[in-house]
Length: 321
Image: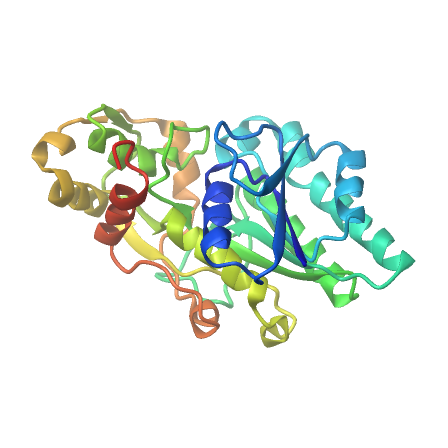
């Protein structure tokens, strides 16, 4: 039996991952455990849920002693919250990863154990000035605490993998859009909001210029990245265990045009321009476009147009769907 542990699995990406694992299991015989601070209102059948905080070291150690074969680490507080609360950002985004790796190392010292660890990192590990497209050799120089926390975790996972304690891979996710549900505290939340809310007949605030360009992928693609990384031959990474995931580069104006195609001008009219200097400053420090050659060569896939991303939301996540 393949034992799968999903840390932070009650969130949107976690739910998408569980659904994908149900339809495309890693092995025919798999058992999934999810640990998060909440249990979903509609728990997935056949999944074991542990309601706890990953800041509780004893919880992490207990989960690791069960010797999961694959660990998906999705848990973190979002970018805006990590920037506003410095202490909380490091307490929740960085230190639990260290504690988890130490628990794995201690377990492997007792008897042979080296799980596959898939860590969700972020394009926030990069900072400007940016080239037209960020390639796989571009310098990591985060300009937010969230980005710094993700980069520290990438480095830890790489070093623990080098020493043979874990078989890790960090995948740098684009901004996941269109996210279902309600807005969150992520500085990037508006990228989904200006599509999701109008499609549901609600007003949406746009805090930045329509010329802002950003890197996106759908929730469906995010789940695909995770399962592909879990099965990847990490020897192909050649020691460079962090990968820029594929996606598509679009301006806010291009996003709005995709909304217009899908739902008409009446939906676009529900977007209100509400400038927010603090959000604009954060977003200005984010990458805009990528050339993710390594990930594409290794078989990772994403959408090629924003129209496709809107279609994914309409097919899978519209409340009436």
